[in-house]
Image 1 (spheres, rainbow, N blue to C red):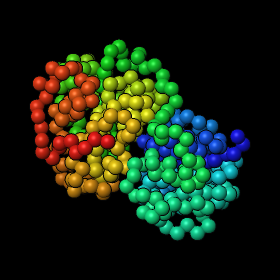
Image 2: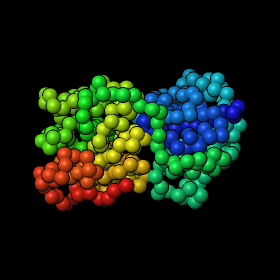
Image 3: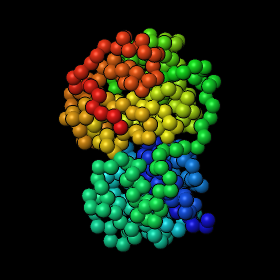
Length: 360
């Protein structure tokens, strides 16, 4: 297999994991080189069939963006030329354009480029899908990526589920016995359930006899510490796991509770059910976890809907602040992973703006 194809997904961990089925589609017919941003590179290294990972910080994708300087562009051109790819498949979300990268790929000598573009691409794309015309708008993100790959000549060879490489045994981190993972952080403040709500949910689970593991990156250690509050029954792994180890921790869990953030898709990739505290700043139809049992909590009709806001634009953060810890525990019970049928009596029935809006 001498054909080398660049698959580009320039944003974060979850985005790259959702590109995994499209990467497999390309890998069925060619050797895959993946181009990622710094926040997504660890996810690319978890994907099967990726022979090489190139990392470059795109000024039109990252927040905060790097300077669009001549030296920064030259760095990418050097990476692309050294990769010796024959063609490229650019994977983007509905609000992104493939054209800036397509132009740089042309300058690097890439002969055939595919992508989805609302704007006229001129000579920058050889294969173009038109969002809203030849590409449906409201479809899950992994299916959007698969559609782009298929148009480029790489049809899906399997069931299209998320997958990652085999995960390590992380029993030394989590200890023995079943557990639920709570991941309270998210890159965008607008997507975070309040820390106090996570703290109360953790105590309820402990009272039901469920072991609780907290996860997060190094910058989130203060957040997880505020939830654990020194309770030695809670295992706090914030800052203690590589991305590969996090995959192992999630693979061993009964379920994950988190916002709409990358670990939700990592859990789906390892087959772990998800209770998703989903802020509607982006559409759940596109970004909810898929392929595993999922319960979506949060007001999907809140005023922040489809705003793509990083910081909550509505006073009081009503889309998620209205979700009560009892609802999270009930959702876990619905997924049949909590302490048993008698535990249901400990959960108060709830309704109102925080009730479950649907399941994916």
